[in-house]
Image (cartoon, rainbow, N blue to C red; front, side, top):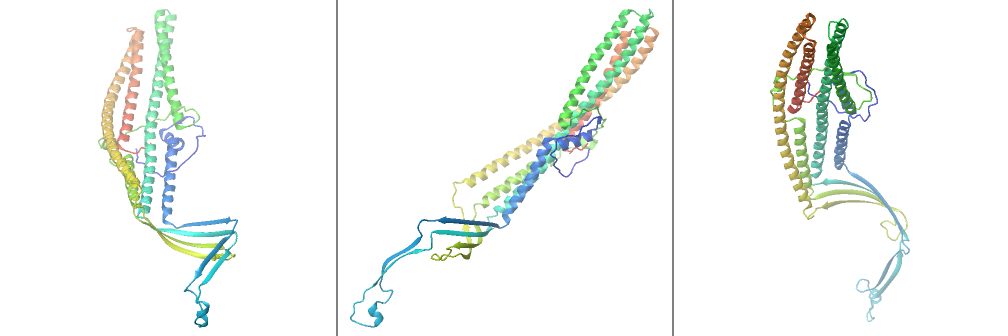
Length: 451
C-alpha cells in the first residue's frame, strides 16, 4: 500500500474496450478511475472550481463597456423665453446719455427649435473598482479554498471506491477458491465412485455402496452449481462496477498486508476528509469577511469617450466627440439586515461542520478498533483452519489406505474427503477475512490506497 498523490485527469469516456482473461486488482483500479462516473463527476467539479477562481480574479481587472442609443421624436426640442430684462441691459435713453426720457425695460420674446428630430449617441466606458471594502480580496480567497475542497473530494471519492473495489475483488477471489475446492472434491468423489463401481461389478462391494457414492457425487455437483452462481454474480457485479463490456475469467492472486506499525497507529487527524472539512470552514470564514466588506464604502473610477448628434451643442446638427471622467462613491447604509443574516447563516454552517468533524474522527476511531479485532480474529482463524486442514488431509490419507485394506467403510472415507474440502475453504475464508479487515483498517486510518 502506498500513499497516493497523483495528478487529477478527467476522462469522460464510457468503457468501450473489452476485457477478458485474468484481471489483477491494480488493473481493476485503473479501469475504475477511468470509467467510474463518480470519479468523472468529482474531477469535473474540481475543474469547474478552477474556472470559478478565474471568475473571482476578474474583479481585479478594469471593465470596458460600450453603449449606443438612437431615438426619434415627432417635435424637436425648443427654447421658449418670454420675460422682461430690467437692470440687466441698459435702456435706450441710458444708452444715448439723454435725460428726461422715460426708461422702459426691454421685453424679450424667444421661441426657437433647438436641434432636430432625432438623437444619436455612442460611447465606451472603462471603470475600475478602486476600493471594495476588501470584499474582492476575500472573495478570491474563498473561491481558492473551495477549489481545494473539490480537489480533496476527488481524492476521497477514489479512496472510497477503492475500498469497495478491494472488498468486491477479495470476495470474488474467495468465491473462485470455493469453486476450485469444490471441483477438487468432485474429482476425488468421482474417482471413488469409479472404484466402488468396479468393485461392485467384481462382486466385492454391495450395490448400496455404489448408490451412496453416486449420491454424494450428485450432491457435490449441486453444491458446485451454487458456487458457480456466486462466482458469476460477483463477476457481473464487478463488470458493472468497472463499466467494462466483456466477461472476466478469473481474478489474479493479490496479497494485501499492512505493516504492524500501521495497524497499531491511530487514524490520521489530517486525512483528506478532515482537511476537506477544514478547507470548507476556511471558505466559509472568507466568505463571511467578504460579506462584511460589502458594508464598507465602494469607490469606482470611470473614464469614457462619447460621440453624439447633437452632442454637447444642443442646437447643432453635427457629430461631436467628447470625453468624460469621474469617481463614484457608494455606501449601503441600510438593507434590512440582509448582510447580517447571511453572515449568521455562515456561522451556523461552520458550527455544523465542526460537529461533523468530531463525529467523523470518532467514527474512524471506532472503525479502526473494530478492524484490529477482526485482524486478530482472522489470524487465529487462519492458524486453526490450517491445523484443521493438515489433520483432515492426514486423516483422509489414512482412511484411504484403510479403505483399500477393507478396514473402514466408504461412508467414512467420503466424510473425510468432505472434511478436507471444508477445511481448505475455511483456510481461504480466514485469509480473505484478514485481507478485508486490513483494507477496512487502512481506510479507517486514512491511508490512501493504491493497489
